[in-house]
Length: 280
Image (cartoon, rainbow, N blue to C red; front, side):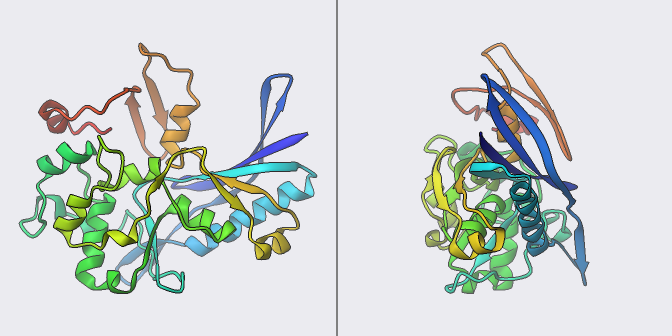
């Protein structure tokens, strides 16, 4: 029986879930769960990215020992955080957490070149100090971007570690404040205003995109192979996609963050939405 695995990373823990279809019904099993802890080094707060990858592999090994016939797997995580790779596709450390204080006050600072209102008009994303755009601004000012050649959101990065394939998925990218809400691609005007090289960013892939199979090294480590597919890789996007919503429905999603929302065909970019700090 074919099994589909999900690696679900939240702010407090991660888990490997197995899903099987039996007589038209989806059966879910939690295969493995692990902690996700913040680490503080000096004044810097970051996630232990490499430990998270090892824990994901541990969970995949457990799934293999259970004898699942794994057809494919996908990964979702929280938003806004990312990993930079150099020309050799090696991580540029440290990979800072959105919970670090380095971005405090940046949206309203005179130093930042884009007003919150103008940014909302283009992206439809609510103003939060820790949004990716402000993190990248810190990286630019510190010189960290000078050796960067690839930008990967967390699910992109973990998928890369499994497959060796570099790609950017749409839903998590929209949490960055760098994706145009109407064109649904990276906003080159914003990148230009920030003087950030657009070559760091690849064309966005929609959920459902087949990324590829495990690399040979990963196959050897885990003892099996699987196809890796992009889910809606922002965890909220995956949660909402699973809801049986219609045009009169709203959802409540509660995890590390809690929010109430609905599905719209088109983004809402009005001044009223911006003043209310709603997010698309």
